[in-house]
Length: 439
Image (spheres, helix red, strand yellow):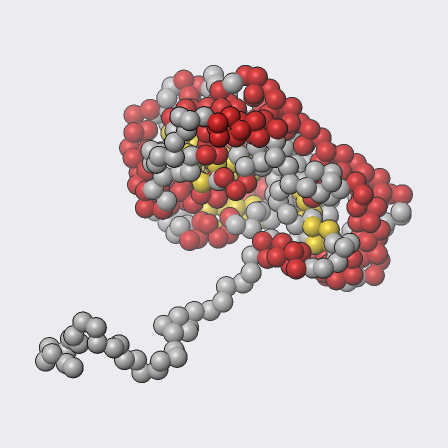
């Protein structure tokens, strides 16, 4: 019954022009994530021969997820601690976690830390940290700025920045022909980028290529960034995984942070890989300011972004990280475990390279050895990757990236022989990963 004012009484049935039409009927289905979707296909595959080289997580040589020994022990201690609580953390996170994570990435004696020019926000691993800083920069950095990302790069970079309101453009990074860094192209494109662009840089173990600048090249990049007044944004997802050394893997960040006069920049830091805390979403965002006077305002706005996004960061994983970073004995144990993990990845590189040589796979595969970190950018084309999946049940992303951390000793020869078959008989369309191996 209508009450005369166009309003139906409470409890009256809601009528619709079509009882079967959803208000979401026009929502288009989004494409499947190229990496997470690949993992779903792998799980559904019943083949006993299947190999997952798409996963971005460390596996043991028995192909099992690995929980670090130091993490296990701390979790047992936390479970037995009756004082453990699960209260909300401050929006900005635990003070001790923030301080120690900054020490890890910048060095405890870094000038920027001594001068109190670094703002650190505990955030949701790498992705959450990137989204927070992207929204902050979209609101408070130069109007109309662009975000320059390497080509290729981690796929989620192309999602995060535009959704925060920052248009992206690509700069050259990888030389397909030589299977290595395109340093000249990188510098040329950064030189040509609009003044004051945000420049996304991988701190170490570039994903997906495994090709990193050396320190002389990093110095050259720094000079271009300073001259063009760009804002460097380091994505630090693999500290310790590239070389086995936390210091070496943070060298590029520390070079930029120590520049004089001070260079404003940001670093997103993740503990997913190097502490095996993938599902705990432990990370930090560090913003380096030119002067300490602005840090209070910067932190206030970062907190505003975080409050509207997730309110408070998770505490369990951060408590584990804090205990490791504060205790010299636990830190040394962690460092040893990271070296073991990075060492196994390096061994898989050597074994795969040797197997490709021994079975006579056409082409030069030296880049498997020279690339560093969790991934190898094989150079296989998209059709060759599909061939490997359909014929050999080997799952890898269509750009030719394989996770060396997902490869095991008992599958090296199987992979090498399958790659040889793909190179000889599958299409060489170049794919999104570049040219097929030269024959």
